[in-house]
Image 1 (cartoon, rainbow, N blue to C red):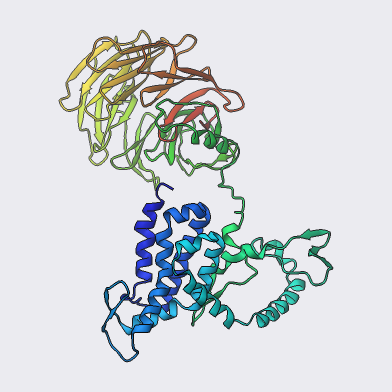
Image 2: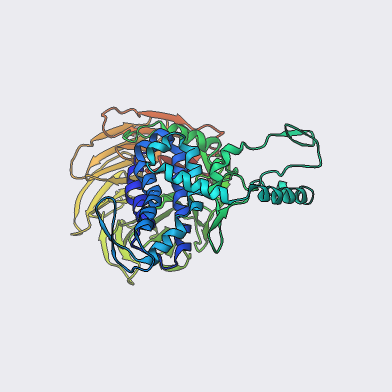
Length: 578
């Protein structure tokens, strides 16, 4: 209803202006004009049926009036224009002078004929009732034209034809009715009747003939004009849609019924543990999950040495299992990182060797191996657009930047010296691409400026191994550690902004949703922490039930637009929960 005035002003009225114009002729003549007229008026009738009489009078009066006003305009032109005159100005009742082409006038006469009046006015009179006399000022003229057409049609001959068709079809096509659910039943003349049509032991009540008025809008094209569609077709506007596998049902329906009632301005992440989808295909534990930017697909890397691309559709009732759209099988070891390089729409995955490949064709574009077999690659991160670079960290605490479009290295930086810092476990790039933070196995964090190559800061952030790092807007860093802590940092500030402590087990996987951190643990607990509150306790904690999630949680990703969670497990199955 909010966009209905816009639809009327920007779509329906301009189309009707062309259809009813006495100065514009159609290249294909009257036939194309009739087709467009019927399509347009059918659309308007569908909207009228949807919104009701009062809303039609309030919002669509101009649209309906413009269409039926063409019959009055045509009558006025016919009274004033002589057949032998050329393009002469014709004075109209509103004081305007109209330069009329006789060819266009003949076209209008074929289009806005008594037949068109009959097949359009009758359905609208059924839809609107007495309101049509208010909406259509020239209703008396249109009624007269409609009755004129009705008188020219011989109803007796039509009944004879229909009766013959009924008798022949009733016996020969009785079995075809089951295969044609949209065709109405013909009268069975071989069985007895008692008010209604008796079919076997079932009494079938015929469709109310008064409600079939809109069926007149379903027309078939002939050379000279249009005739009403066959009575064997049900009224499309009142048809029940066939049940489809893509219709929302079960858990999906329950989820969306709740979502409709939630305010769009609610910034919180609501987790109801509604199981929406399962994605099965991996034979090993899920090591990483990465939604694509559109949230229509996501990538997953597994211990089974494959990367799979999955579609995200509202499909089934929540219990169906979706197969992968594509499987990349070029890795030789367990895949621990996968992501999309947004600038070039390529996929970056790593099993110790970085693979850059095309997500549409699966073609391998480039690989990057460790420079020394004793110093393996331990962490990878892609740069945000418009950068095409990929940051790669190795066990010798060296951070390298590569570009898939060029051979060799772009840059190389040593982030730490000695063995005290340990191995680089994870990397995170800021949303603007200006800084990279590396997390070490010793709990140390190092911040590098990508523009200058200088280390801006290095500090002991945790007492245990760094498990994961995320970078957010406003120079904010979030890190989790094996010491059961989750900490929020400002890049260049010494003290943390927030420090959360998990009592039972460390947070090994987390993702961001606005100003909240959604976390997962090996105990299959989902927690939501707010970065706007100073409390060390989570806003909410949910224990995943065995019915919705089986196995041990190994990876987690948030779909921020859809407010869904992708959860990977050690049994190779990924589940979508809300």
